Image (cartoon, rainbow, N blue to C red; front, side, top):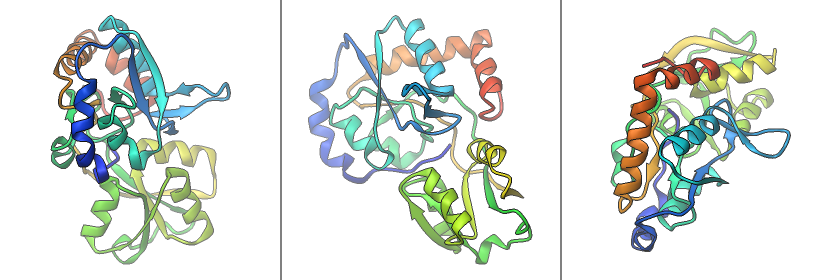
Length: 242
């Protein structure tokens, strides 16, 4: 869904190989700032679609898991370096990322990316506008290729704030994230135009962790087969069901 990120991950590949193999505790790395996929609840705990999904996957794979939060811009390098064992953070599967890490099969379908503007500005021509996106995302790359003016921010909340302050005319992000933002803020509106980018979301693992990848692949498939994954997708409204 969202996200395009490599950075210094290539430099850390060798370091990550030391963490391959069996895992007594699997550390699940997420951002904690992208509702409804992942966020920090009032109790200070990771919550959302991916928390519920990840806990179920760990149970099915008979793994003991714990949750770790990490800022988006360093989430791949810190996986490769061994700070945690998976990325489960709304990360779209892309060929560029797949050169650095491996992905499980997808656990969501490709989610449309939508534009949010201030209410009353629904006639905006996005091709000539200033568009905000979270840095290192597939949306940021799309805006740059489209030829519009791109302004990037470290967190998704900052992209919304940029629209509200007038620093940007619109924000481009996953439809499900923006729908949740609009539900909480009557000053925002969504454009009818959508962009279909990315190839669905999967869990990221180190290239050396083939055994762990296989366990999660099997668990994801079992949830697809018995319908529980579709039930979670519908509950959290994170895109089309399988």
